[in-house]
Length: 334
Image (tube, rainbow, N blue to C red):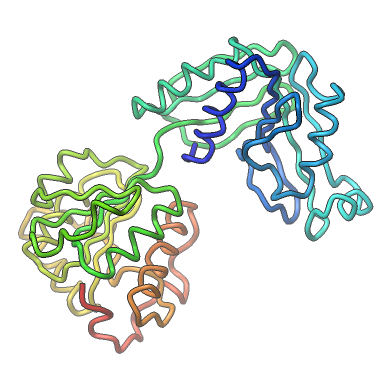
């Protein structure tokens, strides 16, 4: 669950506390092209106010009208589908004839929203189970992936902490990288013990500045499978300290800026810190997709693109991930 969806749940609780009837909509399945992926949330209040989005505006007006009239989920959850026919897809503006299935759930104290938020705020990942026939909701710890499950009778969704990104180095590239990561809903920590790189970070929303040595910070943060780390200082005394600890964690992405030659040398150095061959295979360097990026914003974009691909399980062995023919020795200074 990302921060936008957490705000949707908090808003739902606020509306309920003020005496409103609230219906929660969850995208459970899509066919063809769809603006919003499974797991997207929207709440509809009894007077038509909404928060969140299920289709980027395609079907919201119809849903709002039907919920206000009491046609959908008046007492128990139910599923509804938009875009079954080409005519309906055109009517609602669904792109490329896409189809979206939504589960609508009337919220109450039995929806366990407060318990779910408490778990998220405690950095725990939970699976929420909703029985459509009864409206019964249950929560349990989750360690089996983040996939949404819906079989027509039971909806299971996974909710937990936001993604984390650690950036080693507080230079110009780091500012672009941090800004883009925040927009993608990462909680960003910038680590740089060098005082000359601290100016301005306190004013950047969604970013925390750490003055710890990089290895100490990585150990303290206990990086998990929702975590990524990118080292961009070009200084082995900082980058290598972070990498040697990050590569031993379940972090889904660990990368380092620099040319192929520099990264080959870095791998040799890391072996001296007892980093195994298996762990070294996790290191992405040169970091980012090979987009021909030159400027700091372009390089930051290539990095977050590769991070997104890694998180989504996209094959990263294709041409955009191949640096073997690159003549670039140093992409940018930190």
